[in-house]
Image (tube, rainbow, N blue to C red; front, top):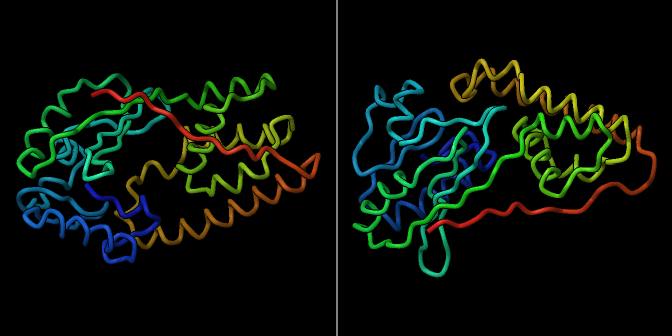
Length: 243
């Protein structure tokens, strides 16, 4: 499944999405593209709407019924070596270690297309509650914890780079704001309506309000800074590769 939201877009015809989908179509012309509310399903056959209209139906099609939640403990990416690079086929999260069976299902299908090297990467997701506990104690976050906290903000629809640029780890007020945002992630009222793509009009209105919310929180962080500089160290997430 190709999700346009991963590129900040809401339609397969939007510039970035259309370009990527066009490249996929060029490289794999036999695959069928089926547009749906969350993006485009790419398969060897047409997919009927009844097959993906429910969460359970979509999970059956994709082969992994796991979703990101406050209890999620592992994140996975399934990648394929193509030419001199690699392509991420699937990225998902699960509350337990997922067996290699999904990779084993994918390998034969891609082998028919001449792609032999398919592999899995995994990483433990640091729980938001773990980060909250450290912020309560005033303990400095490790690099991986900072990365994960910013990822939670990103999943709230916030610009995590802007937050990381102004956030001061040793500022009690800043930590209080971050705790509030993490609690919002854990109990976001909008989650009752996920995926929001099912409600395009309301989603557009929600995006406008979320932007105003982001600006107001950033303003509060700016106004309560205790020094000119802030925590600006950029971090990268690492994962162990499992062939």
